[in-house]
Length: 269
Image (cartoon, rainbow, N blue to C red; front, side, top):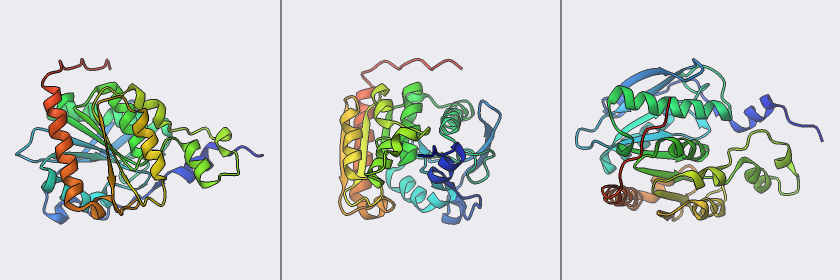
């Protein structure tokens, strides 16, 4: 069997869009359009959407397709219904961010985004709620293990790239040949923040069982929320008000726990 090249793997895994089709301003939200650098010098782009009623910041690690402009409707609902500030950014090769996407690059980008947020907006790690969706769940978990946020929320997570390859091509041993791993079941064990896993029970892309597997590997404290009737890309729509209420309740629960736990030190540069 021929080994897939790194470039072929990237084309199969990452599906970036370059055009920024809309911004938060199109739904009436004020925002900062920001640029910052990853440790290897790649310039990245993101948005900070303030909310004056909350000191908390939702740090958004999006999935493998599109760019931040494809999350505007979701951003609007989240800000209004959860009442939280939002920081969302594009990985290298997505939107206005430079470079070409890779697994190692997304981790560099995630850490750079959090460090920029802490420096520019003067928030502390215990004021951050990390949210990772699909592929972004792996990036969020990796960065959560480094920064110890208030909480980690994973939506529609997969166990690993080899596990997804096996689910899609059950009779081909592709997992043995993949260089890209995105092994969330390994990374989630290192997280020390409260974890919420949300997964649509009709997910047609990432098997619901993989979300449960990620949850089982996560250390306590943790919660699981099945989004009834939701597929992979309509979670926040199919979930309705109950979905946003589950998120709000989890954040309140994480805050109550945090008041009794001393803050962890920041990781070194």
